[in-house]
Image (cartoon, rainbow, N blue to C red; front, top):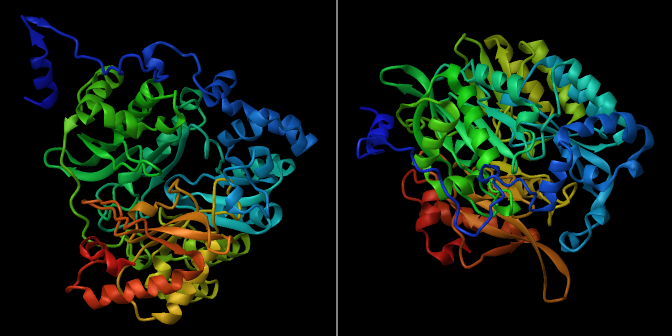
Length: 573
């Protein structure tokens, strides 16, 4: 008897089948969940969404704001609904981190936008990459960042240029729809889907079907907050499934073959929680239906009253996975899901796919490491040229701010790697460079307190000079604020940006240090030690001291994360 049947049997009392108890809120505490029957908006964000669907702002952008300019945009669209189309106002230059939390939003706004281009599954054709490159060069001052959500992010975008940008993107099958906002964000997918020799199952059809059916649909354009999805059939567990709202992880069912193990309720930020297994196995064809059920639960039952509790992880934590699965099966799917196995421990420590690797068809992919994801339109144009000259033109972005060129014949590999290296994109980077990620930071982000991309660049260059032979896998994630866009709690060295006043009364950038975090079959949050903080200018000295202490105390092939959790506190300072 399966778990679902056992549950139904237990619901029979006195010969009468009882309806399983619906999850209940604590008495007297309105959560704002639609399923509770009251759709009265309980905060300004919910009022904004109820007044007008965020997707509707596109018509106003095209018909009014692009013609009349930045000053014509009302605040509720400028800082609210325009996110539904991938547009955030960027930070006005010259405002230091000490004023981030004190200024009115209008004082932080520059008259330019940050624009996210979706690339669900990280997949781009040569034509698509060339189009993004051209937009960057022509409209975005040659800026382009590869994010850890497999987006490409542009800056310095004027509202007057947005309709033309959309037309160019959509002509090659790209969109910015729901790249931000309280919506289903870009779907993470394995960057080696369909080509890796060791792949359990190719999740690409599910990624494409979810995007086709549901992205840009009013059915899910008003969620309590953002909703993050990951789908990967790679045994390397390469999409950070532990930190997504819903993830489908490739596994082989002993009776039914390849499919996916379902995880729900992951997320980091100020209340980090790892996703939990539902214990359910789903075949590839059913992934879109199950995805719809999970996101529908979030839409209907998610906590809308308090913005800081409006993520799915809080609902899963309160309900528990058994109850979540019960509601999913009985109220949203109308059927039981099969029980299934957990994913096996990854065979390789690496998840980023950097280097030269054989594909299942005998060709190769080449993975390179842009420093902290920073590239440019000029660089992307050159990559498109190389990908078409030496491969099929296809490229992939990763959830680790890396870039892959696919379908390279063996006799073309050397020329490709040489050409990429000349662009500053090495396929054999130092451990320092390979392991670094950074969020947008104070350069453009209105929430940030410190510089991140530039800081990562200077620190990595210095570490390559000081310890050029360091050869242990080591991740450094640099975050400009507590929101963990760069996943600082799950890095070997996680750096959370802060500002404080020094003994001379000068405001300085500092980083709170987190040590020994990691993902995988046994994920763990990083260790904080006596609120350890390091001035930004002192990071190279601190990192050198830390690395040398680790190497001196390392036992055998011990990982840094393992050492960091057993080391004495004084050795981590």
